[in-house]
Amino acid sequence: MDKYELRSYSDEESQNIASRLAVLLKPGDVVTLEGELGSGKTTFTKGIARGLDITRMITSPTFTIVKEYEGTIPLYHMDAYRLEHSEEDIGFSEYFNGVGLSVVEWAKFIEDYLPNERLNVKINYIDEKTRNIQFEPNGKHYVNVVKNLVHEYAPE
Image 1: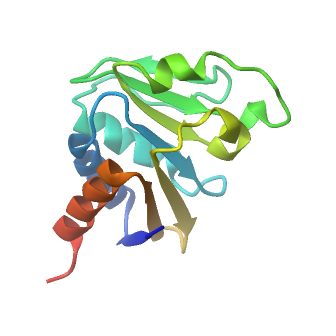
Image 2 (image 1 turned 90 degrees about the horizontal axis):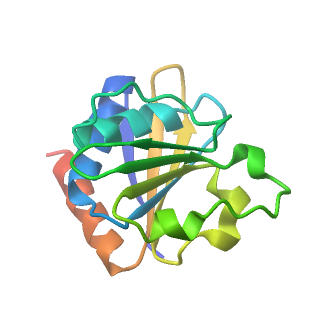
């Protein structure tokens, strides 16, 4: 499985990358976000929301598990952190097979519920402003999405 990387030097740049990614995705797509606390998962999701023309404030769904936002397509923002060691299925398949884009933070805690074809994104903290964003596409559609995204941001 191929991996692709982009480097971001600010929250705004991370959001710009995520915004462009959102435009390349379609209803029913699933994006997982992994990274340490404070690495920028919710910041990245804010960029995805911007790319979907969502104007509502995006906040972490830690205590609600799922937040839904309306845009050009719906955004289902999930935080599975509180589901570690839980066997509870809160209807993930309805979201993953729905009419919106699912973005899942801490997806490793619901691995059994995730579709095989998805885009895994890992955000690594480099320093206060710098992040390494690693994309691991699973499925031909996601490979094409990531190649288009990385090509757009590749240095000249």
